[in-house]
Amino acid sequence: MFDTDGSITARKGENYKYPYIFITTTSKPLRRQLKIILRQKGFPASDIGNDISFRGRKNAEEWFAIIGSNNKRNTDTYKKLLNANRQSKGS
Image (cartoon, rainbow, N blue to C red):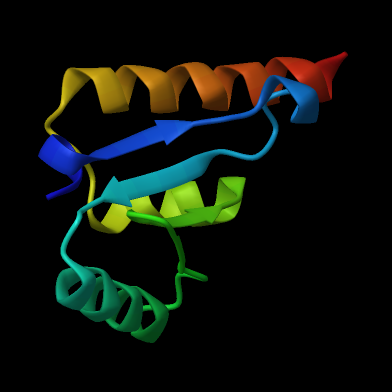
């Protein structure tokens, strides 16, 4: 589901330090179920509009370690965000 209806991003105003994982669905029951499952797995999921989301580098690392992605857009963005965080720490 993350590969087709999800994304990873970060905000420029936060210096791209905090990755956000989003999954979008118009189905209220599915959003409710996703939020429950993600919270049971330790992800601090919340829902806003049609999105289920959570943020944080540690959460993104855990997501990609457990769930991963076969969507090149998501994996490339994840790698870029990790590299940006490592470079900013080295500055």
